Structures are given as C-alpha cells and as structure tokens.
Length: 192
Image (tube, rainbow, N blue to C red; front, side, top):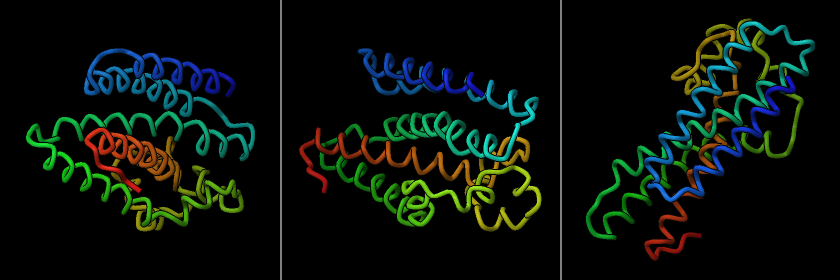
C-alpha cells in the first residue's frame, strides 16, 4: 500500500509541473490525463492481485487513494471539455457559458451534500457500506439504484465500491468549481 502513497506524491509533483508549464489548458489537460490514466491502470492491476490485510486497509484504498487519483482525471477531462466547447465569441457569451457550467457543478454538489458532508467531517460510521467491495457485491442491484452515477464509469466489482466514484466526482467538482470561478473572475465577473 505504501507504493500508492508514493504514487500520489509522484502524481502531485507531475501535475504541479504541468500546471506551471506555459502550454494552453487543453494541452495541460491532455498531458495530465496521460499521466493519470497510467496511474489508474497501475492501481487497477494492483487491486486485482492484492489481498487487502483488513477491511480498514481496503477502505483506506477506496476512500483515500483511488478517489484522489481519479478525481484529477475527472477534473482534467471536464476542463478539457469546458474549454473545447467554450464560445470564442464575446465575453458575455463566455460568461453565460461558464455560469451555466458552474450551475451544473453546484447542482451536483447540492444533490450530494449529505455524502459530501459525511466525507468532509471525517465520518467513518458508513465506510463499510461506502468503501468495501464485498458490500457492493452483497447488495447487487440495490447499489446500482442508490448510486446510479457510479455505474456509468466504473462498474467492475473488483475495482469499485458503492461510493468511491461518487467521492472522486465530488472532489473533482470542487476543483472544477474553483476553475470556473477563476475563469469568470478573469473575465471580470466576481462570483460569491
């Protein structure tokens, strides 16, 4: 497991270097995505082979390690999408577009505020349900109905839990929110 703590540090350093570079945001997103997809592939191979020593170790992996790698992937993919679809026209149109995107992000965070608060407060009493793979297998289709958005990307029962994708999406949404607010500020639009 220590290798993934080192992997997180390696990723943080690589992303920091990408962000410091003078290339456009779309190229930054592509470079970051390449690094993150490699890390994601390494993590998935690890999860298939590794026998977690305890439930707490498995929870740690699916609550702390996987979402922190994966949220960056979601973030950079979304930023790339935002910028590729951003109007090149007048600032008013760009502001409207960015505000619409920000509204979508805010709606997602509001819809998931209970789980978001659970994570931010450092709660653990539901971790066995949220972050253990066997719980997902035991509940079968029930978790598909309760956590529908997680089925869209990662539905492999050996590499996903009820909420690891949801947590990654929430963490990414916070970063996207910051990005959009920064872009709006650049265009002269102060956000509260």
